[in-house]
Image (cartoon, rainbow, N blue to C red; front, top):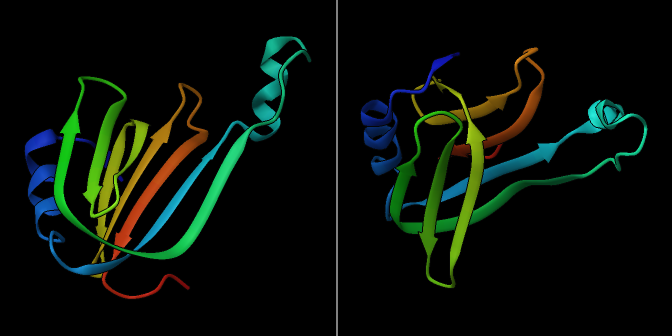
Length: 115
């Protein structure tokens, strides 16, 4: 993966507009919750192979980017994204890592189901 460049990621997002795509969206602080002096609560969200069609895609921010996808019924978004990769020419992988390289958020868009 490489650091997000908004212009390139925006082009990739646009290539999926108005297509039925599969989404993987995951957030977690996992075992990292202990960084609050054992006062933290483990939080996370996970959805895989949800199908959506989005008509608008927006990337905002400077560090820890936000990506929003506008669907017929509302918006889907992920925040804290730092890195990206195009995989197999039909899967856009976006991830947010903390300063120690641990995964905190992932948003993936694919024309085919994720394995």
